[in-house]
Length: 488
Image (cartoon, rainbow, N blue to C red):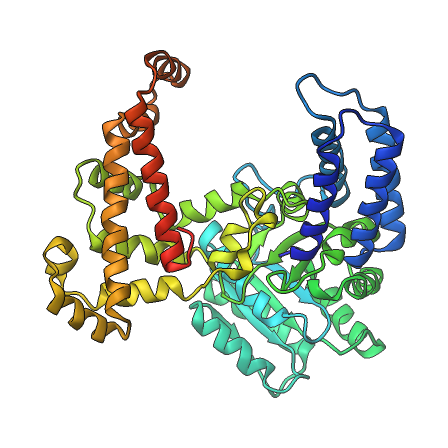
């Protein structure tokens, strides 16, 4: 996501890092580079001009904070201005969820509109699944697209995949289908209705008349414009055209997991005045995220998005599981069964490349060289073992290794590398345990005073041998990454 523009911004920060003070000359050079990067990302010319003018004004007028490098302060100015440009008040609740206009007296009506090919039908299903998981809602999807061939069939397949009811009537008209769906939802106890309306290849009078009729008749509580985030300014023009005819309450940008230039993300809010409510980040049905301006700004500027990364991890591994894993590591009871579960949990979080891009400074890493199949190969090797072999990997002899390799379709050398790396990982954990670091981290989790423990650790000092052990553990982990071409 935003790969190209992130790299361009990283180049700007690198040039600024050597400056000892903020001057009009070096700010002018940086602003010029930012302007070029934004225009290449297909951001609207007017938006680019306003943005860079504000950045220059704020940067030259800012007092350099004590202990902060001038270059870092300029990065903060750019970040703050970008957040200001993309953010909207009161669109996220205190739990970080999208703040939606839910009704208590009748089913909440959500209308999805947009051009054909924007991913509207898939996004309709993603939104329904999001409402089920985060608000415990019972949504129904309405197939109001009777123009595109197989559109109804596609929505029914989407609904089945997420276990959500789909209302359809192929012989009726879109307006009648939506009207009948309202009554159907009331009788069946659905508290949210989502209309998947028809799209066109371009904005035309027939399309606008149809969606306006549906909106005027059903009085939707939310009207979302779904647009392809890869189309840049074209998406913004379409959003503006729909906003002039419909009471839009926000936009959903799709396909941001592809080669997105970022133009639509940075322009939709500034041009239409409508907030971006969600973004599509993968083809999977759970590949939708609430739009947080500060997090997206961090990704665009190459600062990563650690908060979203942590949320992804928390959605897969709960606190009880994490504590159980920690106890196994400390007791040296971590085996290949546990290792297999960790691999599967990582894969549930999404592609490794996408996860690494959320780490600050990831734009400088050779992420494109990572072999995504590496984890699959490791999983295949472990699955080829018997339960006893996974629990007691030290007892795997050469004949067993050959059988495991044949079963996994991999080489004996790969089996040996996995077993060697697993041993090195256990030694690394035991090394940390011997230093008392595992116990200190556990104590911190139990609420002990963090500053006091850090002071005690610094006061006690670290012996030369302990430092050597830690260096060796780091080297072992690095060797594991190289062998399997993945970054765990």
